[in-house]
Image (cartoon, rainbow, N blue to C red; front, side, top):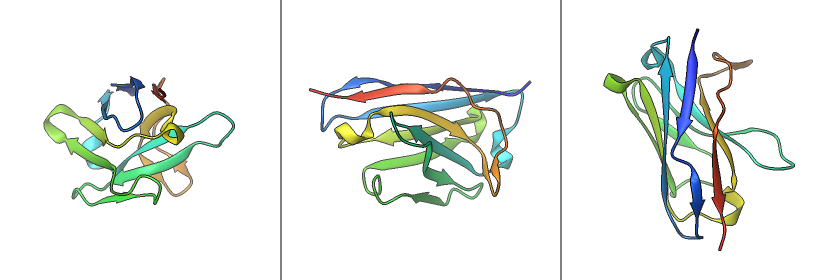
Amino acid sequence: QVQLVESGGGLVHPGGSLRLACTASGSDINQYAMGWYRLARGKERELIATITVNDFAAYVDSVQGRFTISRDNAKNTVYLQMTSLQADDTAVYYCNAPIRDGTIYSWGQGTQVTVSL
C-alpha cells in the first residue's frame, strides 16, 4: 500500500520560512510528476507547485518567487521550501502526483502550516 507522509509544518511568524518534505513508501514517485497542494479553511484544495520527472517546476502566482519545489530521487522525497510566508499561506499542505482527472495516490494526512504573529 502506497503511503505519502508529509512533514515539516508548524507555526511561523509572517516573513518566516519552512521546509516541507513528502516521503513515499510503497511506490517509486520518481517516475511521476509530483505536486504540493494546500487546503485552507473555507477553500478547496489547491495545487500550488509541481515538478516534473525532469525537474521542471511550475507555481501558481500566489507562491511564485517565494516557494521552491524540489525532489531527491535517492530518498523518494519531494520538498517545498517556503519563504516570506504570509497569513494567507496558512493551510494544511499535501503532496501527491497530479494527473488530468485527479491524483495517482490517496491523500496523506498532510502537514499544518500556520502563519501568525
